[in-house]
Length: 392
Image 1: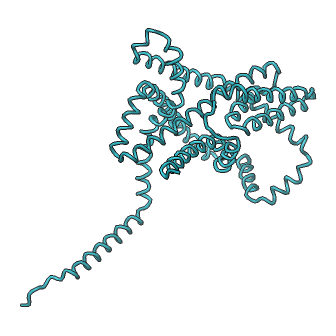
Image 2: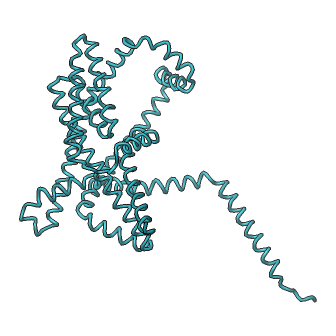
Image 3: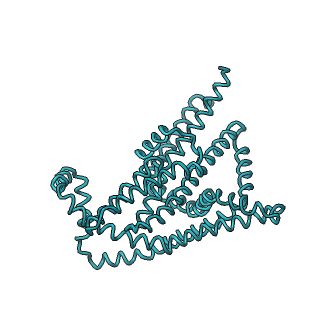
């Protein structure tokens, strides 16, 4: 009987062939069961998201409230001898007051501002629905021609009309009723996440130094020293730019909104809550923001006066008041609160607003400035470091 001779070369080929077959079978099984796999991934992601959401909300709230915490801790309680040697007590009371102020503002918004805003926004829609056909009749035919030539817009309008012209069956009513518990459960979930997020924010504010030190240790454990230094430098620069700009700009806009509301009471402006909200929101956007808020505000007051047959002097006084208020903001209030928070030149600010707005809309117009400032700071640091290394 002939002795079997082991051929290493052919054995290797056989192992490779078997591996290819196994991979092909596994691939076919995966492709044939994509839906269950995606469903498992989706369920896992949903579970992780539900667990992590309160912490993300809490840390975001803590980030926004950190400046207020430092102000209360240093400027208010920092002058009391009782808290000089008891930093934990000072931090705890300061964090409690910070969160209490936020909850009070949130309660005021829910209890007063939103109902008042809804009550004021309805007359605005009525005014627009009356004034547009009255004063822009000349645009009726060109607008119809445009809509007829723009098929996607026409489809959207048809769907919108069908939504109100459809005769709903009893089965549809039952479907809507059946969806109510799901909506109610989601509202409970959002409320619970917000409540847990506020609790997380309170404890994060109390132990923020411990959290920062722990995060640094974790970064240095999992990454090498040069990479860890770069990560921490990026995090530090991001915190400085965003905290100064976002918090400072929000405070600046809040002050402008309060002053405008007081002035609007004296001017007896219609739709005062709606216009004040527009001024507050648009003032968050540098340079273009004041115009984005002022123009529709003046138009609304002007249309209201024209419809009622009253004098248009109110709209003129509103335009003058907004102009003076924006000058005060640009010369006094803004520099006092923001300072040189971004380090950007006016042309760079305009560029960042245009690019951010083109990419992400209104949110991009607001966030474009601090993001551009951050990358400019990092890029300038990199250029300076290379410049020094080359000993130019």
